[in-house]
Image 1 (spheres, one colour):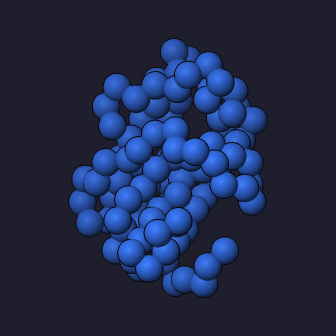
Image 2 (image 1 turned 90 degrees about the horizontal axis):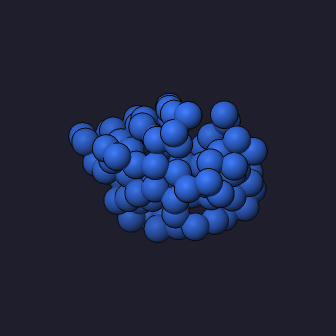
Image 3 (image 1 turned 90 degrees about the vertical axis):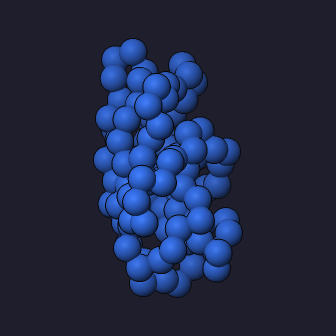
Length: 100
């Protein structure tokens, strides 16, 4: 955990075919990278989907993204999270667990 004034909100849409779309909107920091990771709340995990910068404050799931069967199960179990990285906090400055 880090102390920061940064905030963010995101939405993730997962189709029945495991296709993924959505974005996160961030304020209060300069983002160096943003991803969806796989791990339960309070744990760190590997990157599942790298997000694409669409503006200084918005990062988006790339077109055509799709979960594997295992990632889809993690999504349904609430074991995916958005992780927003900055120069000050290379491991992630803010994160938000994704709830199905």
